[in-house]
Length: 88
Image 1 (cartoon, rainbow, N blue to C red):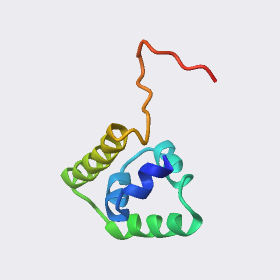
Image 2 (cartoon, rainbow, N blue to C red; image 1 turned 90 degrees about the vertical axis):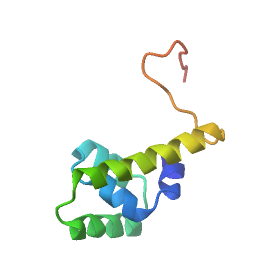
Image 3 (cartoon, helix red, strand yellow; image 1 turned 180 degrees about the vertical axis):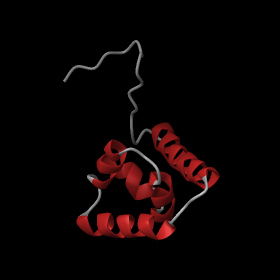
Image 4 (cartoon, rainbow, N blue to C red; image 1 turned 30 degrees about the vertical axis):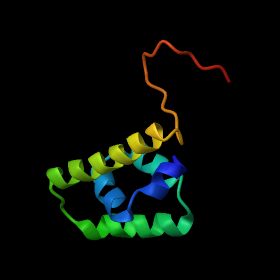
């Protein structure tokens, strides 16, 4: 998660978090430093009302970052319903 967040611009992340559930927001904010958390929350507050199309565009940028990291082998995604099981 932290690797993904380091690759995403703060502005895009702030827009993408608009209107998300508390669970998603807390997961993201729990993976950044306290200073970054403060900056991100401030930026979200400063955005005000945001068009859904802008939110979807920011989320698409994040998905692209994730796909790029997966393709380069830096992260591995677990997909629900896959045939491959994981053991801890």
